[in-house]
Image 1 (cartoon, one colour):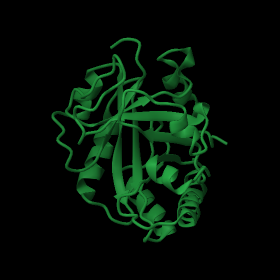
Image 2 (cartoon, one colour; image 1 turned 60 degrees about the vertical axis):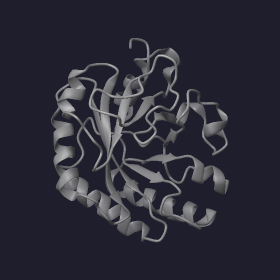
Image 3 (cartoon, one colour; image 1 turned 60 degrees about the horizontal axis):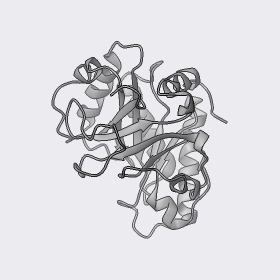
Image 4 (cartoon, one colour; image 1 turned 120 degrees about the vertical axis):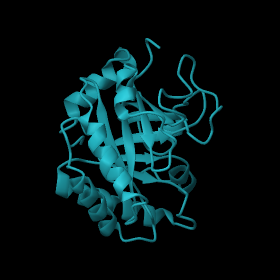
Length: 242
């Protein structure tokens, strides 16, 4: 799979992983890490799962290897309390590491029926501001259809976008319509664990060495070739991404 962008898997408790993070790392490029579902509002579906997997993910020894975590934002919950719970669990698992990706806020339809545009803008921006104040790191936004359906183009206090589109192509309108430019698009989740046989970009895998999992191509600044996203991320993990 030479010549394709670095790939990151997105995993939550209950995903059918066959093997370990070390197995994924040993598979080599383009497999470069994982992002774990940490919290859903103030709820943790399986705290033990997250704690052990965060530690195992960061125990992998490899030059190009990243670990991350996300909070699935719930509109009916308290924004600051959600952010506090997210960071509390990260701290309990050992905290951030030098190869940890930015904190991620996941903003989707599920569990947020009837949410208004203003509630999303105010709530997610509050979450992001709290995370920035307590970590010195500007979060990354995972989003797509909810933002588009509500006409949200605000960056919600985030520095990068991670967009989901389970298809073989990613038209610029996918991210430009929600207010983001190509240089701030960190990744494209091009296949999901429930979809299995959805079309994928030419030359890209539809499954991973450890099972059928959500898979993201790290595409930011990839005009210079497949290694550019890795270099870009490594050089900016400690930055605010203003």
